[in-house]
Length: 322
Image (tube, rainbow, N blue to C red; front, side, top):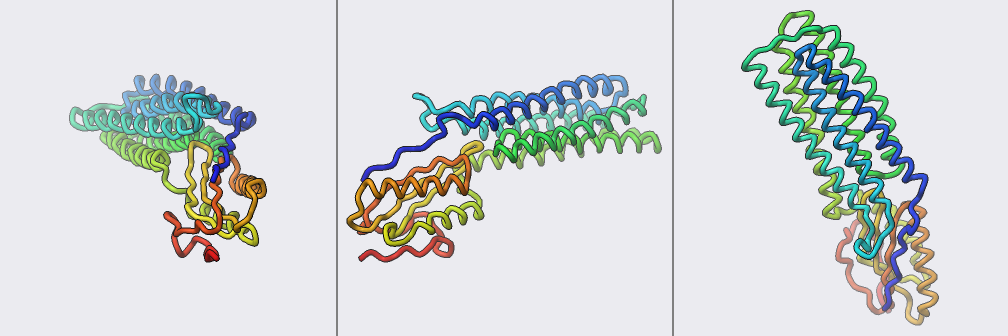
């Protein structure tokens, strides 16, 4: 039996594309400004905490540039060399961002350990506290904006950038607290210890983002709630014409979904009628899960066979063949 063609969005959603690009630009501008301020403050105060924060912001800047490039490229339509589109570039970009975070964490840990071993003194504590507070507030605001844009557009790259920025805000708050404690107690060792804590926090975020992007790149199934929604939509089409379905597969690709399934029709259904019903099903799936590409394989009633992927507890019972 013939397969219905893929129904990709040949023209990307311009509003969504602009929103993703705008959020990426905001993160780039924010990180560039904060890096300059933090580096200056770190050199003036000698604080490993502030220098570590600056290194983290540098990693964030590189990640933001990657996100900006990936969201622009991923929204390009499919072409002769990438016939499934470019959406996976967003997942690849998220993985690259995670690796940058882990690299930054390694640098911070090395510098903190060196300071603990060799000793070091922090000066101009007031300036350090001001810079750390300003950086924390800025990153909280920008991460909220970028995170909202990532959720609205479904962009994995922007989601990873928002996590980077929130982690940076937490880092800056930690630096602020450590500098305040150094000022109160005179215990300079608190500064490199804070650097080690920062490296641990960054590593945790990096590993989480890396695992999430890896799951997408290896085509892990959609979350259970989205799969249940898909089964409910397809199940609503079962009746006099559609007698069953099987091999329903769904995955995230960048900020989009891809779904394919085998749909079984009662004996004697014309190809034209099966085609029309299948397109109605495609539209229903897209209504339930926007930005979804759907592929339906048409089958006659006497080709019913066990589902290769479904969980018997969640897959709707298919009518027996007659």
